[in-house]
Amino acid sequence: MFARGFMVAVLSLAAMGHGVAADLETKTLQVAQAAPAKEPSFFLFSDTQVSFRYQFPTAEPGVSVRQADGSLRGRDIPKYVTNISHADAWAYGTNFFSLDILKSTSQDPAGTTSGPGGFARYDYGATEAYGLYRGTLSLNALTGTKAFAMPGLIKDVSLSYGFDANTKNTAFGPRKRDVVGGLTFSVDVPAGFLNISAHAYKEWNRNGFNVGGDRDVSFDTVPQFEIVYNFPIKLFPGIPLRIAGFNNIVTPKGKGIQDPFNYRGGYYPGTGLEFLSRTNLVLDVGKLIWDQPSKLDAFIGFQYWLNKFGNVERATFKGTEEKSFLAGLAIHVF
Image (tube, rainbow, N blue to C red; front, side, top):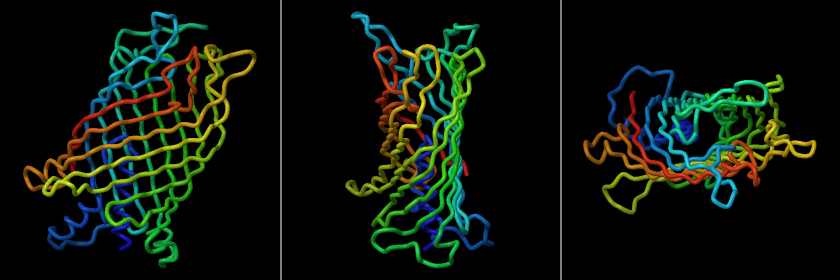
């Protein structure tokens, strides 16, 4: 029961990692039924996958176009995303790592600072690398009890922790670093899983527009929440469909990015509540066509991002709200 619960938790982490989660709980049961007996392994489960997706239109804070009436609006930016992720479960917890390589088209140009008060943009799109790690430790497993389970409500409570890091070759040159730590509650649902996490969140970043040396920005430590889910869809017999997604909430984290374009009347605007949501409809193509489950997935989805990276939209600053569709394939390598 413990191993099964943790394997479900690994899947929840996979959904967080800007990639597409596989139905880990179902796959685990299938492997257990079909695989021949072998020597016990340190890992109860291990999975590595590569996915490719096209996403449009995305948005980037500060990347905008001027309309005929003189006002600004956020620019629509297509992106091609390659993701590499790894998930595993062991006796006391889980690990998940994800790396997104996001390639923008020329609507989101690469660039660099070119001197005091100025910057250069190139005629090709920017490239961003975004990495994420999440780990859990089961309180039931650590204590050797079921004290943290409430039948019909909570399967387990885990210590959860992790970090995010990114870099992007734009003039702004972000270098986001954050750490999270808190608790994850595995909800007792009839099928699939639902995990809810409450964390303390601390972020550091960089502002390349501040060429005078004050480029590093440290934000306040604030509450952060993650909701991750994956449920099978049984409306169409014989069609292996599931719905998988996540919601991520970062509460206002204090001072805004300190650059000349945001400076107003002697103060810098603060950050807003950041809300990121993605929902994917996933088809197990391998199971449908070759009767080989969890080998090849196809997916479509929708992503909504309010106050992207905490930036609040203003008349002179657009691109902070994203509504984008996505489609792609995920290949389970081993």
